[in-house]
Image 1: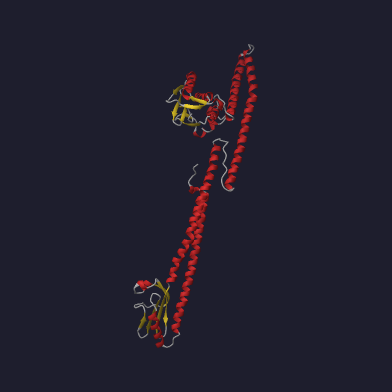
Image 2: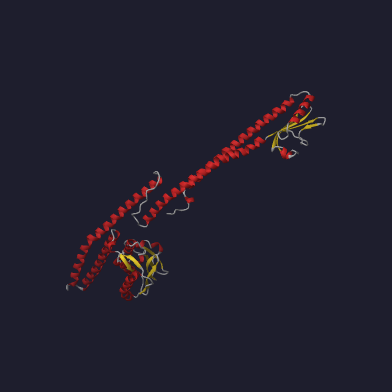
Length: 451
């Protein structure tokens, strides 16, 4: 059993949607947390820098301030803390030579500081202003703030990737499981649509769920449909059986009436018409009974291996006089090979007879009817084709129904059971019946399984 693309599976699509929602919500949460933590870290760093800056402001004596700055500059590595003091007299104290003049509070990347970049951090938090008799600039390393991005990225990947992998695996597993279960239901519905009413959805594995309920509902529907069809078939068979005997008695009475000499010519014509109609009714009831028998138990006890070619050739010989009388050309193409089938001889003969009669009845005089038997490795095939008006594509399934007749065939003889009987016999033999376009005309193919 093969299902459709797994991408069409509803559980997989739901899993993808849930993963997308989870991923987006996780990214938004981590993004908000990153912004909050980064701003908090910058705020703490700013408070620390301002505190250091204010500590220099507290020194009132200029000489003491210079002494402290020299000590701090000597001990502060520039990659951690930059101190730059410019006195009003023009002298400069700094652990970073060439630092441009700055003011206020800002974040400065290391690229703006003219120093060996390998000795600096990525960026600095700078505060500058008047201290004593000069301008002081302090820049503190904010590397631990910028490193938060890497930390958050690692945490995000460690948290999100395993979840995505596990969720995707579970989603694919659930999708495959659901696809197999849906495919079992689809196959059962497909078989039921083709008329195989004994088809049931197999018991679905796993705990009961909505798919199990749907499978059980399909089985209940199939059982109800089977009971309904069986009841209708039984009613048809009962009616045909119960009415056949009275109609046969009417036929006998009509024959007796026709044999009398007391009828006028007009009355004799009426009796002849009544006999013809009665004979048609009897044939219809016989066909109904035969279809009911075939669709019921079926005469499988008479099945045997036989060659299809000589059987069909004999039937073509039987119908050649009728074809010539109606102005048709009946041609037989025997093909090669034994064309062996396993079936009941009389029923297989009836298939060919009904198809030939159907072609003779529904094609105009001058039409050619070709009957062919071919042998293939996968079984024999019977083909009957004509160059008549054919059957519209939309009607080809309908003509296999009982009593269904095309509008163009309403005025012709027949009960509309010929192809229905052919379909029933084909089902009994496991053969495939198909109707196609002969361009022009109709082609009917019956493909039998290997004997």
